[in-house]
Amino acid sequence: MKVIILCGGKGTRLREETEFRPKPMVPIGDRPILWHIMKTYAHYGHKKFILCLGYKGEMIKDYFRNYLWNICDTTMLLGRTPAVQFHNRHDEEDWSVTLADTGENSMTAYRIRQVEKYLDRDEEFLLTYGDGVGSVDIPASIEHHRKIGKTCTLTAVHPPGRFGELGIDSDTTIRSFNEKPQTESGYINGGYMVCNRSLFKYLPDDPGMMFEQEPMKKLTEDGELGAFKHDQFWQPMDTFQEFTMLNRLWEAGEAPWKVW
Image 1 (cartoon, rainbow, N blue to C red):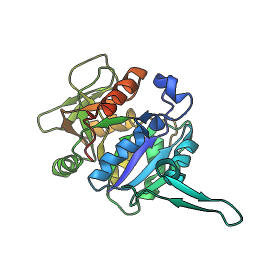
Image 2 (image 1 turned 135 degrees about the horizontal axis):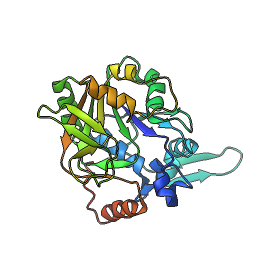
Image 3 (image 1 turned 180 degrees about the horizontal axis):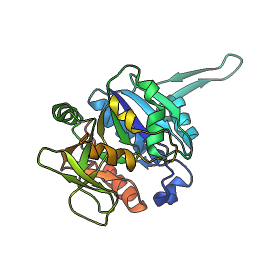
């Protein structure tokens, strides 16, 4: 299954870093958080990525265009016939990365809408945000999505407390979606979604439309938004404190999201 990753937001709450680069390029260790997210999906065999670019998207393009330069030792032959030898092999050699410019100021629903063409004839796809890591069991989320038969199944996680709260009933159908209440209990939208192609009928031709607003509310009204409960580690990188915490876990060799 192809993986759509939303990479276009400005990340204003992490201005210490995002003033200079897009949030998906903020590093954990020596690699951007985007790479960590992609490694999670690739570990489970999903290696075809579609990145929805926006704010400072050229930096993400440059990172992948120069991927070997970024991660490998090199030998350069200078002169009239220059050549470069890259010495290292890497586990990402079978990745496919589509870099799609979806507009600097577009909102999430419009970004997703614009990349439908890159799904080819696929009827299912994976979708997540470019700023959160977790120890999510991707195969289990896909199995659950198919079992409950919804248009979109999001991974429901416990908050660090400032996000939209989900009301989930006993059969894991979402019955309410309240954007960003002040709560520290319940479940919130953690991304790592599994979607059917029918999702696109919920996405209006409106650059100002957030996926998390009217589209998700309409999915909820139609009984088409499901939840895959994830009670283990999940953490966004929204603040400098969270940036520091994620880097501390990685440097200590205690990163729960490192399943590869």
